Length: 130
Image (cartoon, rainbow, N blue to C red; front, side):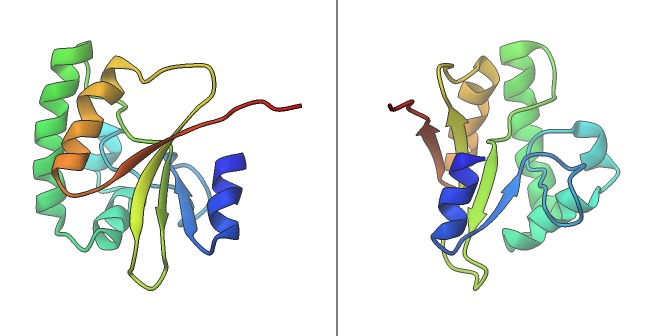
């Protein structure tokens, strides 16, 4: 929530990796294989935001699914926590928020694939201060 509000204050629109959020507030990139197959609105919205055809997003997912299965034996998960973008079509990137935890095996498998396809993934580390 802290990182989401930080980017909102900077003028970005911020979506969360949760397709069940209110209309237009969540996204699906590599997670939720069943929702991807059914063309959930959070998946089709992501294709539109990335200015790509669904077939191209499906191809990205084929690559990512293979990497996730190799790393963890299943196709679920793998999305960063947030998708951050300027509404005018300018800057856009993903953010994974960490506090005391580290990147998971699935994230280590998928984030390089996302980056290889020209999308930045930032890791925001929450630090507790007095």
